[in-house]
Each structure stands twice: as structure tokens, then as C-alpha cells.
Image 1 (cartoon, helix red, strand yellow):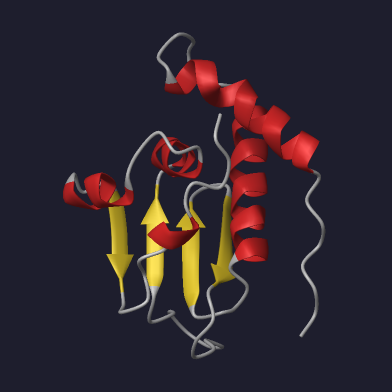
Image 2 (cartoon, rainbow, N blue to C red; image 1 turned 135 degrees about the horizontal axis):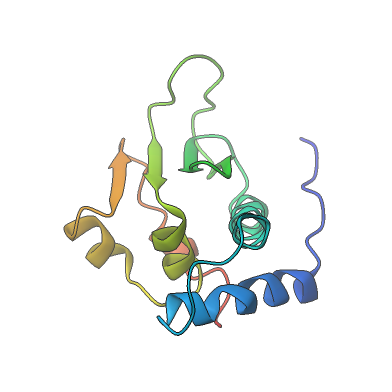
Length: 126
């Protein structure tokens, strides 16, 4: 199995800290490249800490990763999918929103028996 590319912890933290004022409601939505960087690095980190290919986590329009051990998915729509918007993903990744609350509020579409990725959240505390 190929190893995941290393994530620079400083780069991850800086990308997350750049979006915190938006998450706190203090500033407008960050520029697209800044928001994309935070989403992509947190997803890449999730894939590194939860290696595998049984769950696909999608945060359109920025990125999708496969993670979590289990039956490998290779073609078509994966049986275990998590999809959410960038704000919700970053709130989850930064420990500002609980998985159960996001699911209950309909902010996450999670399908499949392995779609609960809460044990790997938060990715970073900021």
C-alpha cells in the first residue's frame, strides 16, 4: 500500500487559522484559494490518520478523499459516502461542531454503514 504524502503541520495549522475568523463570524468568507487550502489540507490529513478506501469524504467544490479501513471501493458510487459543505467540514475538522449535531441538523449527508467518521475528528484544534 502506498504511503500518504506528508502533511506539514505548520502549513495545516496556518491554513486552518486563516479561516477561523470566518467561522467565528468576524470576517466574510475567505478568498477561494484560502478556503480551498484549508479544506484540502484537513481532508488530506484525515486520509493520512484514517488510511483506507472504504469511505469517501466529499467537500465540493474543493476535494474528496477516500479513508477508513474496510472493504475497498473501486468502481461507481462508493457505498459509504460523507458529503458536506466547506464551512461544515471545517467546523468539524477544527472541533467547533460535533458530528452528531451536524448529522441531526442535516448539514452532513452520510450514507453507508461505515460513514460515521467522528472518531477521527477533530483533525486540528484551532
